[in-house]
Length: 150
Image 1 (cartoon, helix red, strand yellow):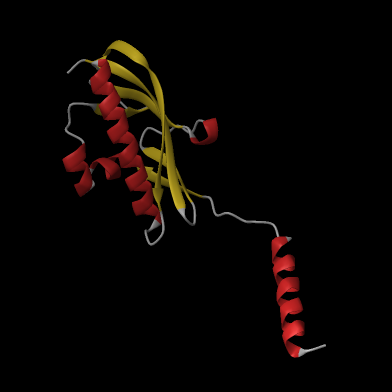
Image 2 (cartoon, one colour):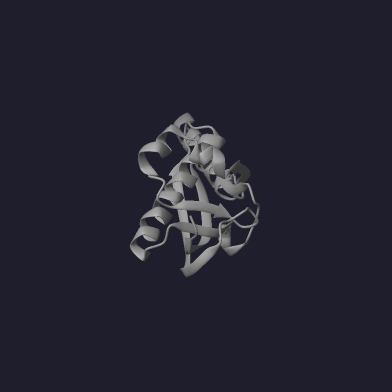
């Protein structure tokens, strides 16, 4: 067998062997605090304070009116970012979307917020659950739009 044919067959055999290996995707659960997201310098230019965010179990002002539930599922590119930064960035994107929709509904708060990754509820009065992958990081949130006492 000629050396070039041998190398070509070896390369094909190697590719076939790699194709049969199971794909393993990284999905690391990272907990970040809601406060760490609100404290991001980038949040100052995006969240105007007209809508407040309350995780389920945290102290909430008196709810005057509930205006419907919503789910957000925000993702960000995680390449070259720390897991914590990518998670905060994805969570900030989610809060920005909730703020926009809250204003459209006449709400001044989003209450009873929980993490909702793959429709599995994870509740904490302080933390948001994030899923950090090798390429994409995501935060899924579920909450209720409300008018709360000031």
